[in-house]
Image (cartoon, rainbow, N blue to C red; front, side, top):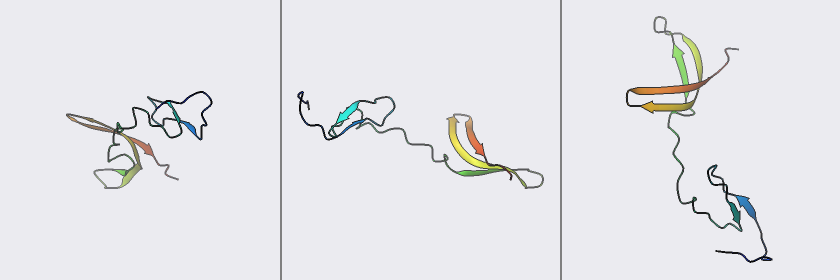
Length: 84
C-alpha cells in the first residue's frame, strides 16, 4: 500500500520490534510483523531460593532474569532480593 503526498494520516507509529522500527502509517503492517519474536524461557520471572545443603537454610533468594541453556547445562542470571 502506498500513500500520496497530502493523503490524510490518522496515525503514525514505529514498529515495536527493535530490529525494524519502520514507520507504520494508518496501521499499515510492515514486513516483520508476521515473524514472531522468540519466546522467553519459561524460567524467566520465576522465584528461586539458594539453600545451604548442610542446614537446608535459605541463604539467598531472587528472581530469574535470564537463562542461557547449553548442551551440558544452563546458567541462570538472578536479581537477588535484599535480606532486609
